[in-house]
Length: 384
Image 1 (cartoon, rainbow, N blue to C red):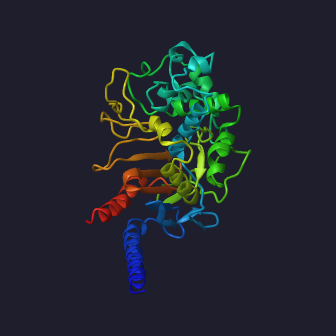
Image 2 (tube, rainbow, N blue to C red):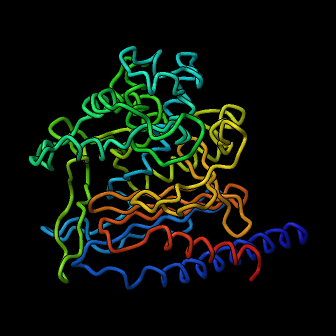
Image 3 (spheres, one colour):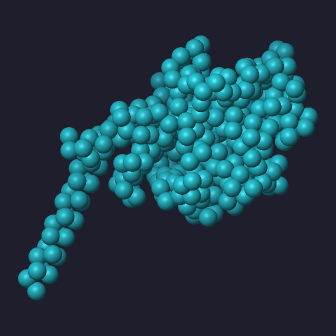
């Protein structure tokens, strides 16, 4: 009886100690975000998970200024380029189904695709080594003084494909260089539709969101569906926040059209931890850093640009995830940036740590905020 009592007392002590550590971590993380937003400004939603459980979840500020509705764990933000990890998973599922191959070419999938890109493979699209022209640059070249696209007349995925099919040349020969490519991920979304026979958003719902219980996550299509508890995007101009929720490119899907929230992204994180959608062997292809055709290390382009985060520096990328380490810790991560929104997802698989930061304003740096939060947890884990 005394041994049983001692065991219970030890277990209780350990539980109390774990709770105290969790509360200490939460108090340190709160300091990072506490002064960023008010009850009358757009803000930020933060999720920190460790060891398979949520240790911190908090919303700051409001999801839209018309009603000052508060941001919480169920507020849906536009994920922007954090969409790419879901697009990549859709492709991987089709490969698993035997309906698609990583070495399948654009010429096989789109028989009318011009010669410059016919030999580009699905793998090269996934890893940003395809060399497709940037569709926003192609849009600008077609304006001829009168904008063809606007926030009220947004470019659609099929029109992106038409622009690419009218282009004359690639940026570089496929596999020889690395350049971040929204064009590639729009095309990947179209490939999902073509191969599966389902609209891209429906395929994501049926194969990813519904099985994982991500009930508020969706590809937004204006006039077709609505976003539950939607956050609207804002930009700080002249000391006040102006709604900048939609642009001419906000309707494209595979590169950035997804909306989700902290509660659903916690389920996504758990699925990645448990390999719920694909087993470890199937996931390995997507978590292996790409090498160039000659075996060389990819680098960011040397010329600065909007999507060039580290000009000239080495880059490590898999399928929809950057794979660069952080201070010696293995990491898979991605940022998202679009009009009115900034997002970041940082995962440290060996430490079982994930940080998600979603902003409906453009004056915050979610990547830096996520890493500050991650550092707090990593330091505590190492006893610092």
